[in-house]
Image (tube, rainbow, N blue to C red; front, side, top):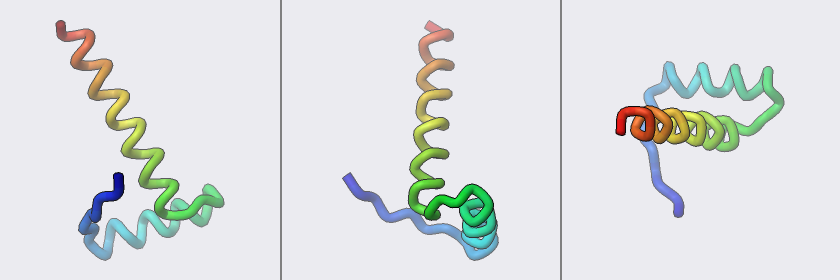
Length: 49
């Protein structure tokens, strides 16, 4: 499933810089960040129940 995400220029510039250092594409970097965020939210939910 693909979703379009609007990103402001400052954030996009930061993503480009980080992706260059990490030798990843911006898309891959964002996918990793979202994956980590979702896992963290799931763990918070599980621990709260």
